[in-house]
Image (cartoon, rainbow, N blue to C red):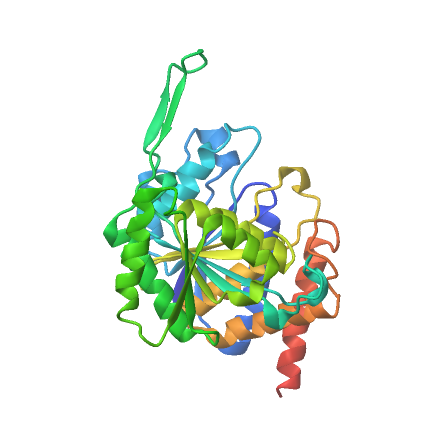
Length: 355
């Protein structure tokens, strides 16, 4: 029995998570996946009522679960970034979720803003290091709001941190039905300490003679993702650059309404989420697209071993988008609950067709 912690969070989080859980319930009845849910209140409303963001006890509680499903965090009534740092970064750092896994897959040609790109040409996965780099919080501001103000942010990489995420990327390339190639994205020409990535990548590759490698600086990688997205299979990069190129990848596959991520520590409790924000202007309006959250459920099932359920969900998403039953991933294109209904109908149709 798998236990799943559910944190709907803020804004549209409650609505999109609701649809994700409906899909999970439907597909688990078909595959026999056994789970139970435990809901947690952390987010803006909880903070405004109690003054509590995400206590240490909550991090400890997360460790007792198989996985975490997160909706969205952020609210204009709260200082920008405070809840995100406390909850999202608190979970990532507190549970050492060192892999941010971002599948970038095109399901329907009409969703891609690039002319002539087909689903066969866009199917990559970005492995973003998730606990180091510029997001460690090392640094600060001195003499704030004066003419002599100074802001310092330290980017930190460790050999152990770079090696473990690089090794994950090579293992993933072996598992995927792809080109068996790992591309390192860095900026070691201008940021010389980033040579730790270049050297570590080369050493890890020595253990994976069956996997090809490639390299691109971050600026060139952005260009090539637009010009030739079919070149990429598995990409490994640091925290900041991974944050940037995965949003670019999300737009290539149709927008933030479809993109999801896994925050993973292999073999341990891991967190799964849509990558969009909380979109507070759409809260309670039944307009938010839930496909990204359903994709997060798909990614979670893959991680927990129910690959059959993950495949069923992926086929349902692909069918709903390809046939334009869900014609767009923009807010308001299809009501949130209606999109959930469509995906559930697709899942049931697949089951009926399979006998």
